[in-house]
Length: 370
Picture 1: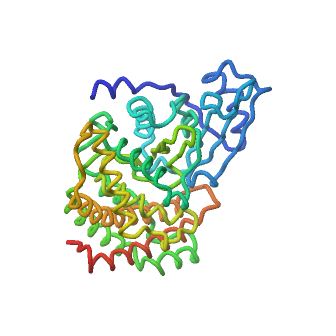
Picture 2: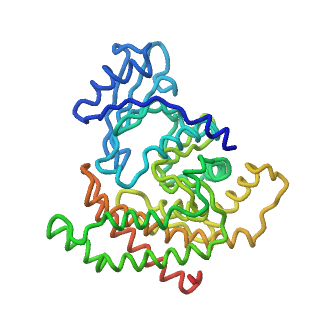
Picture 3: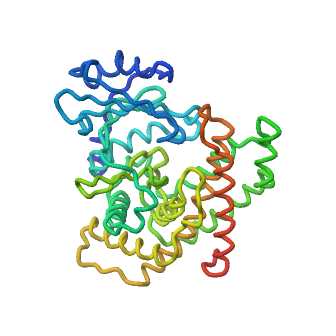
């Protein structure tokens, strides 16, 4: 497997820093001749998307429509500009490797055409992102469960990126050290510490969640770690779902990915945690996930018993806590560092932390955290 992975590790690199004000011109004059030399500007259309599609990145979507469907995958290229300062907490080399491995080994993700100093240029995934209404669609949920199970089963990175412990404890520490003891203005500072009491209180929560993780029996695997609806694309024509955007990928307990998926059902902009799925819905999805995981492992005749479902249900809810805290820390870092505007990171952190506290309180009665 290591040899197969190493074969995936080749892509073009251009030492060019993208500037948002010149992004279309840069694509046409510099990037297009490198990755699509047969394209001409007369048949090119571009769409610049800011944080409507990506919370911490900007996107330029480029359509080429000479005598064919402009949304065919080969006729669309996505140019992404990384959010400001995200290099401080995202390993961009690992992200590029993940894209390539996901494309070559699992069939998930489009090809990576080019890596730039502060961005990527890659292919297009046809389809639409999931939304809240899809939770009642058994076919789409089955396809989602299969995509997640396939990712957990098949994704392998070089050993230097694929350790034998979860990345979450070290990521907690990385984010924590990037959070200031005081924010840049009094109003922001007041908002933050009205919710979180102090930076030290966050450290206590981190230690507690690490203790929780040490009780997990779920397997370690290369996980996506950001399973919000926008990162799961459903293709109606093929009936399949694909996971995209692997900035936060890394080794983790699989129950954390499932827990994150359940937590993300609240939505991204102003999340509504009344949409957090109940026990029946979670167990329904978990059973499908376990069935699909068996298929991807070649264990076609292996059944899924109720004990497995209940075990993973308990650990997925604990995993949701682990990931809630991760995204709270991430939001506080973004509020402090990022140069992009248009997303209220502090309110997002507040809402996510409130559900973290509520869920933890409920678990102390029914899903004991040791």
